[in-house]
Image (tube, rainbow, N blue to C red; front, side, top):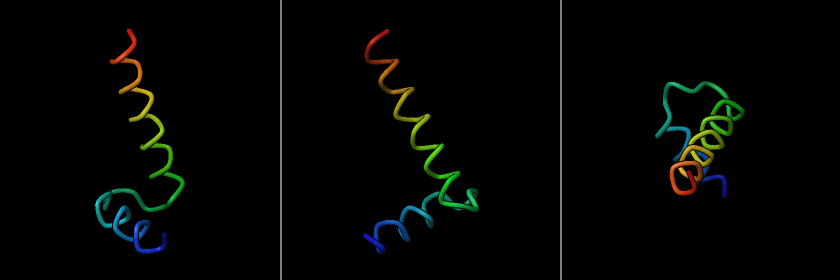
Length: 38
């Protein structure tokens, strides 16, 4: 799990904190759900 979070941190370099990454992933997930169910 730690390796996965490290990889995610590297993939989202502009984000400084894990909270920012979580918010981004959550909004991205919500956006995909909205596109799937308009």
